[in-house]
Image (tube, rainbow, N blue to C red; front, side, top):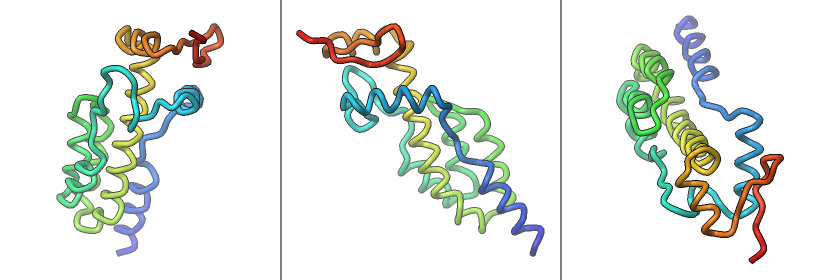
Length: 143
């Protein structure tokens, strides 16, 4: 029993997707201008559904497999899904919130990528009066 709890604790602590410092800074810049996952400008849409990822983790690791194979796939979620599968049914306790949190982080990372590196995203920012300056800060261009 103690071994299972230790394994579960390790899974819980290691499985959440995180953003780098630069990604957090860029996300903050976008949010300061009113651009979020919920209110994007241009043609961006969220690749992962937090509700779907959470609900699918009621089944053993399926929510993680969803995040590993979706539009913004992150392959480390195959490992998380396998660990959740091995520790099911107790993995439901951390799997549901983990799926929700990770789907949100994946969406944030994809939002940052879209506006920073994708030409369509940069054009959408320009069309809405925004631009990145030389230091990478997002600015509203006066029109």
